[in-house]
Amino acid sequence: MTREGWIRLLVIAAAVGALEIACRTGWIPMTVVLPPSAMATSLWDILVSGTHWNDILVSLRSVVAAAVIAVVLGFLVGAVIHAAPVVRGAVEPLLASYYAVPTFMFYPVFIILFGVGPGAIIAIAVLLAIVSMISATLVGLDRIPTVLGKTARIMRLGPVERALEISLPAAMPYLFTGIKLSVAYAFIGVIASEFILSGAGMGYAIAYAYNNFNNREMYGLMLLIVLVVTVVNTALDTVDRRLQARLRR
Amino acid sequence: MTVVALAEVASVMPADDHHARLAGVTRVFGRPGSPNCVHALGPIDLDLRRGEFFSVVGPSGCGKSTLLDVLAGLAKPTEGTAEFEGRPIDGVPAGVGVVFQEDASFPWLTVADNVAFGLRRAGVDAAEVTRRVDYAVGFMGLKAFAGAYPAQLSGGMRQRVCIARTLVMQPRLILLDEPFGALDQQTRLLMGDELLRLWRETSATVLLITHALDEAAMLSDRVGVMSARPGVFIDVLETGWDVDRDSRIVSHPRFGDLTGHLWEKLRAESLKHMREN
Ligand SMILES: Nc1ncnc2c1ncn2[C@@H]1O[C@H](COP(=O)(O)OP(=O)(O)OP(=O)(O)O)[C@@H](O)[C@H]1O
Ligand SMILES: [Mg+2]
Image (cartoon, rainbow over all chains, first blue to last red; front, side, top):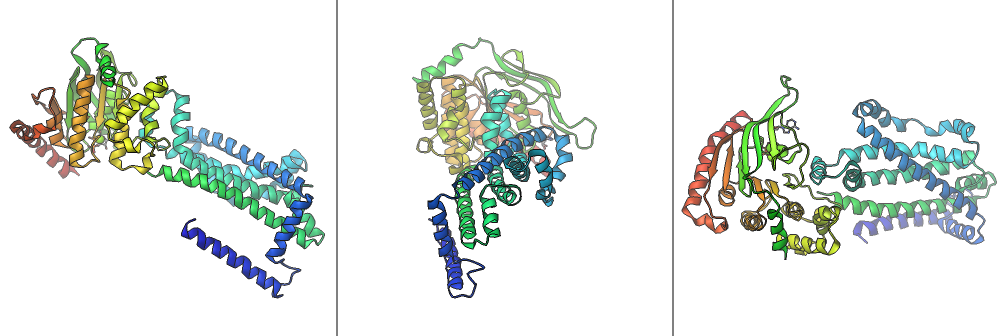
């Protein structure tokens, strides 16, 4: 591990330790925040008892579906916009201010369209994620060096070969940034939507525990989500770093 | 052996003297008459003889790369005609290889995979690909880096990857745009020798664009000297070297004369370029 890595770990450990002490000494009442050790044992119980496996599965399924749809659709839309400079000029300012819109306010629309359930949840998460993928696609296609296009022509590649064997790998490091963001937004979209439009999923389970004054379970589930997101993000980061290192020219 | 494989290429070509020809070629960027319209090149007349080594020198921005684009079929002349092997150039013709001025290595592939790219696409069988790639990678002094990615190489090494990637395809016309620009003087001379060796083995026609007058004087059969933009040939010099020349001719008295003559021609043009900018 790098030096930064160790220091980062130390900072996290210190924060967790401080919270533990603050809770145990009664400085923060246990009715408000549980000490991290109690969160961990609660998480352990949740996993062992299996009461929430279904919620975990439901959430992850929605996240994967939303991320895949956002990435594929976002890439296609981005590629089309890139190919049509006139459309791009018109649309790009809209994309830039897109994240100023609180997407969640549209939830009634999606309930009407898809009913309460995964359909509406996935739709909101896709709506939240897709623009990051469109933007990343535009950036990636822009950054393909002109000379690689010339090289493709000298090698007499057809349009499909050129797209798959030159443009796609050349743009990949940028596209992957879009993939990473899409996954992050998909998590946010799914978990947050589950609070309001679901009868299952980790978000729903947290809301349910909260409404039933079940602090212990609520914090256990929160810890679970933090851990899952961290693991997924670390994995994507590793790939990302490898791609970025290769991009350096 | 590779020598044989490379030599085969020459034998399939018709025995006719001029290999590529430009007649009255100009290239203008932007709509003629509009304020940002640039007359980049020409009019240029050029007959590349089959199997000759032709170098182009000229002040920066005079249109050398533009000339290369026209010969490669990447750009259409605004006026005039371009021909390769007796046919008008319309799109990139088969049998032309180009090493561009900019780094064109594929950063997502290793050195060996970069070099193998064109061969694999052409359906050459795996054993033959390995053999030719090994040869070209060794030839370019990249053996120790065959498994490395371009990001791990210096600019000069990446340029050599591009040279190797072009040469393995055994093009009949090789266009090189300042391929040794990023190399130190010693390596540059040695690479020049390697290029001459390869040129002899393949009897390909070579057009080399260079900033280095000594390189042009040492490597070429003929050197075309271009004016400041819009570039036209103000002189075409026959060097008169033997086919089996190498970098040792730098100690030949004629080498100094040639280099001196090139500089004399270019000095005035380069000054003009400096003043204009
Ligand atoms: N796509 C383009 N649009 C407009 N002008 C261009 C374009 N490409 C080249 N030019 C202009 O044409 C002229 C010739 O460019 P070119 O790249 O051929 O010069 P060069 O001789 O290769 O220069 P260098 O020695 O610096 O590589 C320059 O003035 C350049 O600004
Ligand atoms: Mg140039």
